[in-house]
Amino acid sequence: MITQASIGLFITLIAAGATLWKGFTFLKRYRLITGTPTSRIRSAHQGYVEVIGHIIAGEYGPLIAPLSGRECVWYRYSVSCLTSGGKTKHWNVERSGESDAWFQINDATATALVDPAGATVRTENTRVWYGDTANPSISHLTNQQFQHSSNKSSGFSLNTLLLKDLDTSRYRYKETLLFTHEKVYALGQFQSVGGGRQLPSAQQISGDIIREWKQSYDTLVQRFDTNNDQKLDMQEWDDVQTAAHQEAEKRRREISATPTMHVLSCPTETHHPYLISTLDEEVLAKHYGWYALGALVALIGEGYLILHLLAA
Image 1 (cartoon, rainbow, N blue to C red):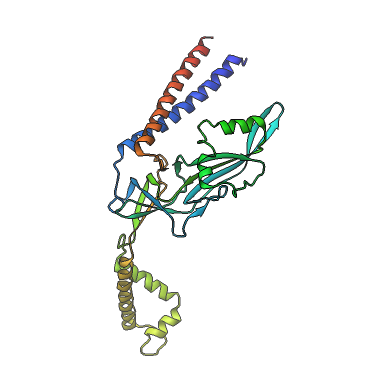
Image 2 (image 1 turned 180 degrees about the vertical axis):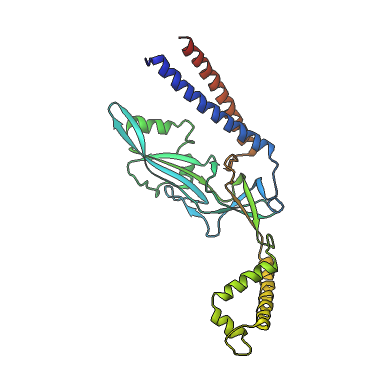
């Protein structure tokens, strides 16, 4: 027979498992942040690295935040509607989104392109405000007003509390932004391409060129058939290979002359987090340290509750 105690025990065991998993996640991130040395972009090794620099806009310039209309390099937003269900009220997300445009980080040694896809973004540039329409009016929201329109979503806001209590606003807008010139901390997969890196051999390129030419065999014969017998003999095939080798050397020189491009992206290993934060490195590490400690305290409480339920 299923009792309330057994149901409570089952729920508590699931909660304890989730708390344990989150606690280990927070602890791992704390150790990675404190234990991974900071690399210079110009000389960073290929793989999982930590870089610190300043944000600059991407190739196509800054983005426009969809709710506030502010210039930024990355945004995440949501629009929620206040709905009633009996005696309770709750916020339902009507629409949300996140930018996927690349931006750049410069650390005075070089510049790296940043692909934000898959990143956990931590920043204090999160704002929440309220209105009566699904599309917020931004004509009255100046930069200064935006900075003070509400506290961070995790903080206390008297204005927010009054708006919610008076039920004068049916819509809640939330926006998180990254701006140019901000100092940024990033932990992710680093790769450098161009500048002669991973340059294929002349033999490899020559083989690719011959395969390209063979796709238009008639043109190849017309070019190298010196005796006009409508086919390529051994001597003419030697001429093809010589021409392909010369073309391969030319392409190698062009490839090696391309500038080096550094890219930071989401690690292929799922156990490595991809973090982007405008918080100071020490502050970010402390946050995850406190989260891990909080998970430990919660786990102890859940363990005590499990023992109490087992004894009941």
